[in-house]
Length: 111
Image 1: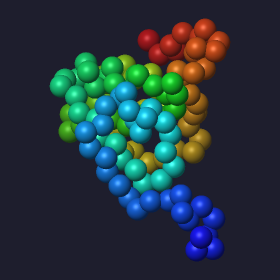
Image 2 (image 1 turned 120 degrees about the horizontal axis):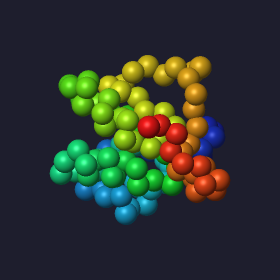
Image 3 (image 1 turned 90 degrees about the vertical axis):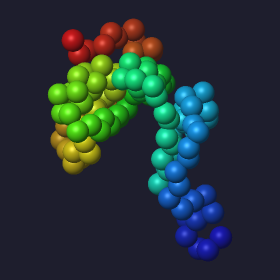
Image 4 (image 1 turned 45 degrees about the vertical axis):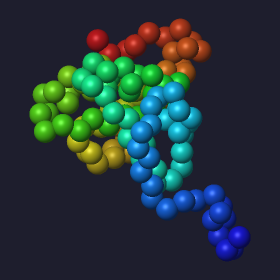
């Protein structure tokens, strides 16, 4: 140890390629500067991948076409969906969708 808490558990900013949604790195929450790239063929597959989660806490959609980004965001089942890296709003509602729905039987709240 270097004297800093958890110093041996932290890695440098890292990008993982060749990831798919069946991999542990794509399924579990990682605390740190980690990016997993998951490729998709079309918009429909991207939405399917985004919704294939146990948590659904937050998602981000990036697009040069804001109408398309909003259309995609409306179909993502997450507590919060951020478009094009909008700044964090601490007063905005926040919470998970997926695990909560499984535990309570709640249906999707958005139309």
